[in-house]
Length: 405
Image (cartoon, rainbow, N blue to C red):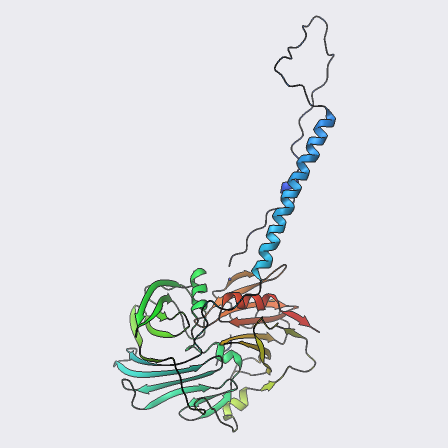
């Protein structure tokens, strides 16, 4: 598996409101009653203010403007604090356990194919995906993946590897309506209204998407249209490439009362495959003699895993990482720290990202995926990214990151 924002208001000048009014030009004072000239007419004309009155007026003006400025700055501070306020529980909790069977029409090749996909999920960490030949219920198993939160198994050859929390966060079969709605608000996706599949209401979204790359605004030639329930279940998907629909999937059955066997998500013991041994090294717990950036556990979450991942992609650079994951109900939050300081560049793609404020003196880049919101930032020179199924949750954790020496 390969590795891999909200606009920031411009603050007005603090001093603009405190600037003194332009001084009134003084005129030379002449004799009050010059000889041979009549006395000036004073009826109906206010007498000129004395210097003492003018000074008092200036002081009062500065005090009022100063109080207004202080109030405005206090309001800005409140807005900044609100930007990283700890979020409460989601309005609609993600579905905890379900199984969906899809009829898939694949038109990418020379000959159209009808296939079957079966996706079984027990959030936050168990996922089983099966790709079958033929129409539902399927004829022969072609490929698949089983993730049990600790390891993953490739079907049908049972090749086992180590599954990090990040693997689960980027599993394309997991969707989040909150993440998709945040992408809509950011202009990276479009909401097309509600529909119904199998008697379930789902919202239609349109976006460009390829693998684990972040979402981008759709165009007529390349886009994905999906229909996702409020609790994060994909019911329909259509993929268009170069103006041609190459794949469509529609749910033909949905089981929300999942009763899977105890070993349904079991990966089993044994040594990982040879290629995994050559390219990965994952150790439970934090690294030794390393400065770490620690994430807080949001309210209602508990720590799930802490591990050091020194994996190396084949023919790729070494990416030593420290990961922490937190679980709250059916939600998973992941913090991933790159273990070398890197001020000028990040080890992950920022293409399509936009700036997001993370509190006083902090900012980051936010990117959107079908199942998670990703916030990238730097803490004490160390690149860190946070993934969560909600924008508010990802931004809060990213804003609360602290370096521990």
